[in-house]
Image (cartoon, rainbow, N blue to C red; front, side, top):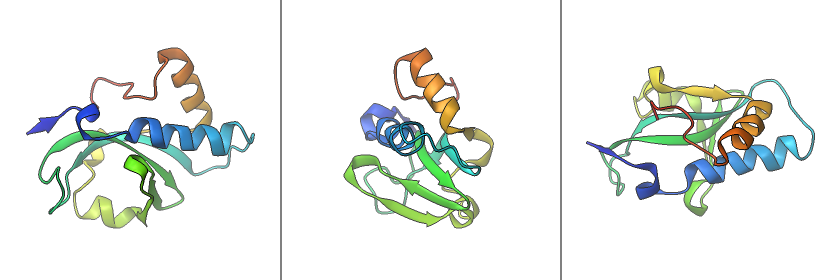
Length: 116
């Protein structure tokens, strides 16, 4: 079963804003920082358990950060890819400069590709 992102939360806005506020506005663009858009499988016990849906998160050198829905999640990236919650083939990674370009081009925070 799939669901539209707007039915789930604010992940595209929250995580895209984090990238723009912390990397573009501060003129920092280190290697290994990406905004990611991809498909994920809802966690067991959550209101989205078992759903496959488009999601956005931040990856910084092996750590996943997620600021959606007013929360802050930090987790080892390899564990989330290993346990299958992130569908690897669906992931698109954007550098901070690419995020700024895409927000200006599309006038929203995502998803920007049809797959997500």
